[in-house]
Image 1 (cartoon, rainbow, N blue to C red):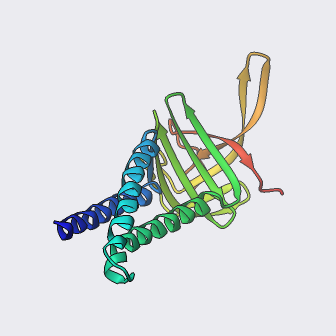
Image 2 (cartoon, rainbow, N blue to C red):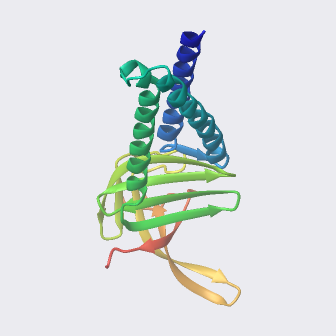
Image 3 (cartoon, rainbow, N blue to C red):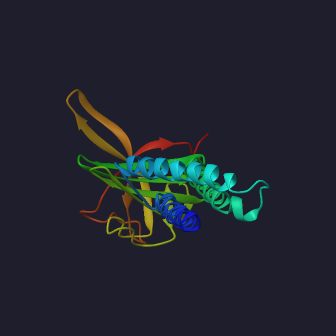
Length: 204
């Protein structure tokens, strides 16, 4: 019975570790408002079983060996993998921003964060759900060339151009920078999403 319980603990740790690793990896591509709660609940269960395994398995051996530490060690390996994934994802999002544009659609929003290293993060959000896509770009003046000509049915070209647009407010008209989708001739695509420039570090 003791052997069986040890095997069960090992299987549960592997399952929980695999699920948490998958959820962490998946957070690079999409996040939901309740993900952190779900991750926390599973983590608490996993930690409880890990402590139980550590105390139970080591008590069975006067001298610690590989068998007595197998389940706790596997748990630590999963923790290391998850922490490494988290750090990698965080470092991707924390890269310095060169230009950031955003479209506010009230219940949904779309933004592109152009990093100084020539990569970008495309973020499409809607009611607590964020979906991310990644790619590379080149920029010459106000013209941005993307590595793809279609992103999530929102971007319909591989070219964006920053231009000045007059916006009417209650207290008057202001000129603001917007990024427009353009074709290879520089003509603005009609009826396509326009993005307001919210961060512009190109002249710094």
